[in-house]
Amino acid sequence: MTEALAIKGLAVEFDDFRAVDGVGFSVAEGESFGLVGESGSGKSTVLRAVAGLAPVTEGAISVSGETIGHARSKAFYRRVQMVFQDPYGSLHPRHTIDRALAEPLAVHGIGDSERRILKALDEVGLGKGFRFRYPHQLSGGQRQRVAIARALILEPTILLLDEPTSALDASVQAEVLNLLEEIRRERGLTYVLVSHDLAVVTHMCERLLVMQHGRPVELLTSADLAARRIETPYTRELMVASEGFRREEA
Amino acid sequence: MSALLDVENLRVSFPTRSGVVEAVRGVSFTLGRERLGIVGESGSGKSQTGRAILGLTPPHATVTADRLVFDGTDLLAASEKERRTLRGKRIAMVLQDPKFSLNPVMRIGEQIMETLAAHGRGSGAEARRRTLAMLEAVQIRDPERVFNLYPHEVSGGMGQRAMIAMMLVAEPDMLIADEPTSALDVTVQLQVLSILDKLVAERGMGLIFVSHDLRLVSSFCDRVLVMYAGRVVEEIAADRLHQSQHPYTQGLLNCLPKLGQSRHPLPVLDRKPEWAA
Image 1 (cartoon, rainbow over the protein chains, first blue to last red):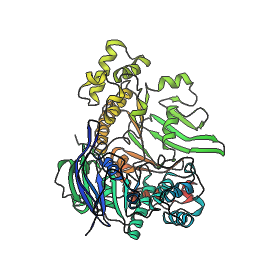
Image 2: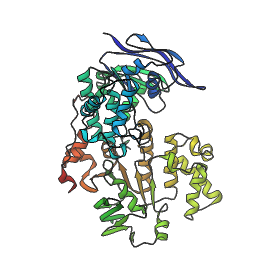
Image 3: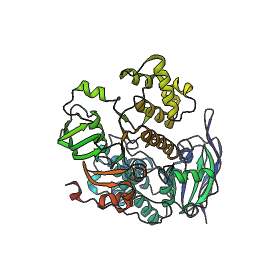
Image 4: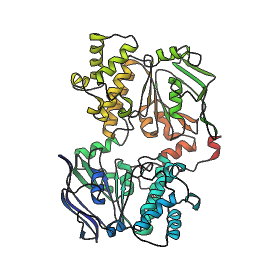
């Protein structure tokens, strides 16, 4: 099986603070891989480092076997795209949906934008009617669909998903998760999904890495997690916490 | 048991450029010294319900009700001054994010002491002593140190505990908690909840817990009101949640991914117009 993404000994430092320390994993082509942890665990920073949004202090990142240098090439971004957490913050408030979708095409000099924009909207379940609306005219779920369409329009092979449903209501979350799964199946995409929600990650991913304080804690399969074959106390703690509040009997 | 709070046909409406929007449309419930959960998705009117009880609805909005009585006081007939006396002293509110709801330029201890001073419940050395005791009650290990810290110097969980301390120091009879743990990490969330739970039980307060998280609320509260489009669509004992009748409640429970269950695709909510009728 070929590796779509491999990370070895990754460290990210901001001034004197080591946000990520010694993280490594590899994701096979077509696999969906999860990163789980609480705030400050460095899970999002790993994703940002891959996308070139955070400085790589140590370690190596390779995509389809090619090691990525400091500067990301345009070709890199055609293969790797990212969807951010907050659909309210990641779309330009004064650009129409049409313009948001046309931008990546223009940057990469891809023609045929008319057809591609309509296709991308259709793929994320938004009709033509949304094309010339502004973000404030859409609901949170619709905006996240636009953000997904914007990432998909370049036909990448790897999608980096940073808490894609955390800002959404439960019922909308289900719709967006279903959409992401459907797209992955159709296009054979590779996902790296970051979430604080164990249930979401096990639902979406085959394998996952639990992180704490910037370090890897445990690498396990979703099946192991669901069957509670857990090695480390921290993962167990997360697991218990995700099951809701339990009153201690006096 | 006489009810602490009696709400009948509460309505909150906002005038907008495209007409009047009714955020809360005829909500009725009573609250004793118990834990009541109000659950709903964004726009269901759950937060506006809590705010209307406290009197924190924006001035341009209209609040009406057939009855809105707190412990014998008619809240709708009460003057602004009377409402202000109730707020903080007898009815308190914990908000979602300590980052935005604590005063950033005031030390945590001083903010808590201010609550006491505002309600004439002691000042000076006595207030300081009570503040420190309260910080200890919310399980802050080193109250003396935290007393002198500014909100930006503490973590989210610590900030939320400070906020709970501030709300409970005046010993209110009723606490409205609006998404008190949604901004916190799961493990911290549970610590904060258990502190809240213990204090509510010890002090015999009535608690209204407003949240979007149906599972969390049902594990914490005695009774749950499920809101949809400004109305209560179902009221149910928390331990009977799995026997819920309304398709919206069932849908909300169903659409969450669950550990150890493989359901692809997830069931989605099929919103029926009659739910909002």
